[in-house]
Image (cartoon, rainbow, N blue to C red; front, side, top):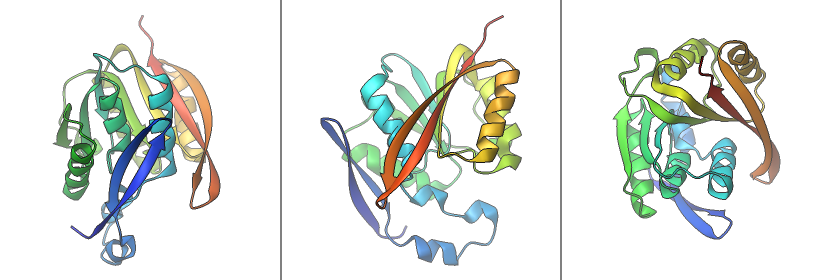
Length: 209
């Protein structure tokens, strides 16, 4: 594990602390396949926007939440802080280690962790909410995500995805809206290194027939 840097993330009256990899360039130097790209090592604007929205607007009390591509774990940590019993998943062991550290430094204990590849997803349990921030970057993975949404979301449950305006993500969401999901969208503004970023929060509620 490389050296980490701790960043405060203030959500109204509450500050969370997130450790991220300090030297991501070093990790990029050792990338051999697409799976090695260290997306997990950075705190992305989509994760911050999702966490802000959760803290201000969502009551997770008593809900079971599955986080996909948890990365540093901020969104799942905030959901847990709002009352969720959260399962954080990623397929990178280093990501899980950092997510655990971030939960610990924020005093959050109601989170469990599973290594999980979307292409061969090992979890059979169904959840009230499935969340993911900036997980729609690779179109070839969309069919696997759709399968997880269908199999791991309870009927009447909701998938919540934060995305920074990727066109392929919009097409995927449109496809889901034609299947069996009702879609609502909330747009939020955040900043990344001084630059304004528009993040869409997609709420995909599974219809009950």
